Length: 171
Ligand SMILES: CC(C)(COP(=O)(O)OP(=O)(O)OC[C@H]1O[C@@H](n2cnc3c(N)ncnc32)[C@H](O)[C@@H]1OP(=O)(O)O)[C@@H](O)C(=O)NCCC(=O)NCCS
Image (tube, protein in one colour):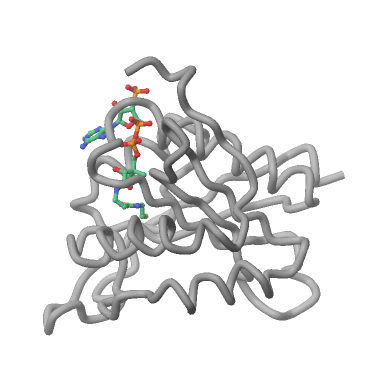
């Protein structure tokens, strides 16, 4: 499928069902997050409606259907960390491997830059090669490994810390 068919735009409350569907798929796969509880459409709608202006939430659409979402959320409440955001990115399984994730991540970095962030970061399971490849292609650095960071289904899991500097906002 040609990448031109992908539309990336800020999320609206009506995207809640699509975002929750994609996220819940990611939760079920156990490859991306320690979260195990599915996210409801209602919870997701309230998140979008109450999301502070300075935190971008984006969706990717194929043929008018939400197939992916990405967001930057608060890293720490302390004022000195105001320019650091934690990102999330999820592409639905039927839309992966076609460049949607890369296009969406690049758009998220642009949105974070426009909102004044100087760094976005996250943690990735070492086995998540799709996520690690995406990070490598979009300017992230693997900082190091948190050993046995938390349990997922009763198993202690390591995570790799990844960060993407946004130099333009470091003046
Ligand atoms: C990680 C994820 C967002 C990538 O999205 P995607 O649309 O499949 O990725 P893209 O097609 O844009 O590919 C981006 C790069 O990663 C590479 N890649 C994609 N899937 C890969 C895989 N399974 N293994 C190795 N590399 C992979 C691509 O080849 C591409 O690199 P290239 O430009 O050199 O070809 C998607 O797989 C996903 O949503 N996974 C489940 C949720 C998740 O893991 N989120 C991240 C949480 S940290």
